[in-house]
Image (cartoon, rainbow, N blue to C red; front, side):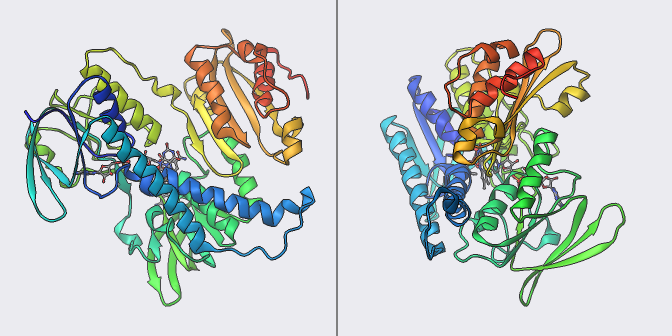
Amino acid sequence: MDFQILIIGSGPGGYVAAIRCAQLGMKVALVEKYASLGGTCLNVGCIPSKALLDSSEHYDQAMHQFASHGLRVKGIDLDMPQMIRRKDEVVDATVKGVKFLMKKNKIEVFHGTASFKGPHEVEIKKSDGQLLTVQAEKIIIATGSKPLTPAAFHYDKERIITSTEALNIREVPGRMVIIGAGVIGLELGSVFSRLGTKVEVIEFLDRILPGMDGECAREMKKILEKKGMVFHLNHSVDGVIKSKKGVEVSYSDKNTKESFKLQSDYCLVAIGRRPFTEGLDLAKAGVSQDEKGRILVNEQLQTAVPHIYAIGDVVRGPMLAHKASEEGILVAEIMAGQKPHIDYNLIPGVVYTWPELAGVGKTEEQLKEEGNNYKTGKFPFKALGRAKASMDTEGFVKVLSDASTDEVLGVHILGARAADLIMEAVSLMEFKASAEDIARISHPHPTFSEAIKEAGFAAWTGKSLHL
Ligand code: FAD
Ligand code: NAI
């Protein structure tokens, strides 16, 4: 065998698995079909989208908030090409960091497309057509996912686009229709809406952000509507075609069947992602998939072939970078004979709009469905000194705890810095904290984190202190 471990795919699943395997003393190789490492997350996902969210937030604040702070800025120019250049620089620096980490950990990196020749053998086709065969004792598949693009939407990468192309638009579109009010729809919708695009979102369901806490999602919708985004819930898109002036989106009301048309400059298709296994030739290795194309794995993330593992977006579970990385670490440690564990209930979900939305554990909908007897403690940011000082008064913290044991079952935060605040709840829930524990822990004043303490107090005693 050439290597102990061969990893296919260099996203946050694959490259983190590679580092952990190397740390545990294994001889590791990583294959990536693109020239840069880091996968979807670093190249066309988490990092570039956050870079544009930050830039557009600055613009929005300069346009709408600076004056209240006594800052009069005249003649703000929006330089979209520079915004995209900065985003590219952030991506470049981040992917170079992964390259450095591979070198530092003595991980052999091959650039080319991997396909199975047999259960221990993988062929790598390089971009110049050269073929290379590598044998490994164990293999980790971490090939990630791609956007869903139904044929009726006529995805053309120019006007009918996915997130990948949306991250590279170099002028501010006049109008954008977004199909899907999920995480991508709202994050990228926020970017363009802040820059001045008229954004309309068509969503199949009767709510936005399925999977997140319903009350938080309803409040988020109101906030985004106030900022100018338009939502068409309960509508299904029948087709999208390129028109003379841009695109034409046909959609209909799910209940009345009434149909409508929208003309737009761009149509962003953001209706979810599918596992990516094209070209892998999984059958040659004996690896099987479910009806959605996900590679089937057991609790240890082993496929039908015990020495072949699969992690990240290509297997069941939330399609999140930190979930992929945890699975990479888990597999490396299992292969080293350790007994690691992931609590999938405690993988936090975050939407990086402004305000941000973050949640961990059960939502109220899940608790009701499971017939759980629970208590709710809520605290609004508008009652916090810190939030008033920075004018970030929208949203609230909600703590859900078991009615008899007081154990925290879920925490949901809609508000400023929710993405970072949620970690307090994740840590406490990892240690099975009660709402009383949250209430008794000293939180620095004045901070946004005090809202978590107050919501904990409310869940524990029925009352918060400052309300
Ligand atoms: P990927 O990152 O998709 O990596 C898979 C890699 O495998 C790719 O580089 C691919 O080229 C390579 N590959 C595939 N087939 C082969 C082959 N045959 N041979 C060689 N290489 C191959 N998640 C978050 O947690 N937070 C966020 O803020 C966030 N923002 C996002 C924003 C956007 C716009 C998008 C699209 C996604 C976002 N995600 C976010 C999701 C996150 O990007 C994914 O969950 C994560 O990248 C999955 O990691 P992975 O390692 O499983 O796969
Ligand atoms: P999503 O699953 O979050 O949302 C898709 C939305 O589209 C859903 O609300 C769904 O009901 C709707 N939909 C599906 N088919 C439709 C149709 N035909 N017409 C109208 N609406 C339809 O998927 P999204 O936003 O594409 O993101 C993909 C994945 O990427 C996410 O599930 C998430 O795991 C990951 N991601 C994570 C981010 C984060 O952690 N901050 C940011 C961006 C993406």
